[in-house]
Length: 178
Image 1 (spheres, one colour):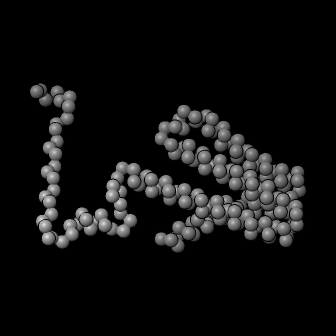
Image 2: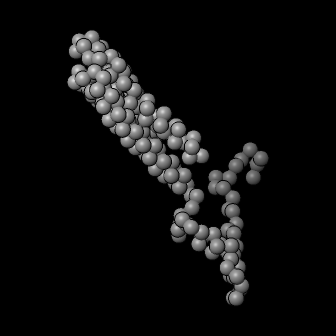
Image 3: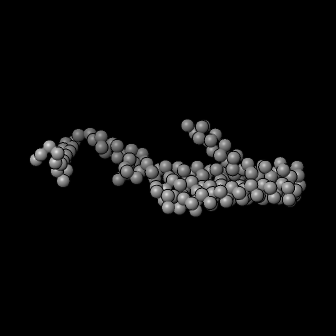
């Protein structure tokens, strides 16, 4: 074979020899001790898809906690708005909170589309127009709720901040959990 030539097939790698069987009467081997660890199951462990699945469940839990905290913040802000500004304040808070939740769900959808491997390249223009349209909707909703409908500006801004409260609560949760 000339030095420039390379073989078409890779060289065969020798297979490892099987591990020797444990001696009868000996204590539990390290492998059985590891497999008997709490939370360990047969076939589980750090494999190719294990970390990705764990990250996926963790990110879903984070999003769920943010949504739950946002709803709790809405209820607290709704009581405050009803007491301080009456029905118009409550209505302004409800409208802006609904727009904020919708925009958050849309943003979650955009982030998932962008994080898909090479899927966003095909739909880049459509994704861009949808993202810009959603932020235009947010701006128009703010304009309408404050200027046209004459809702209480404080309650409207509280409604727009419920997701921020949810994210801040999740940040505190992450800091104190670790």
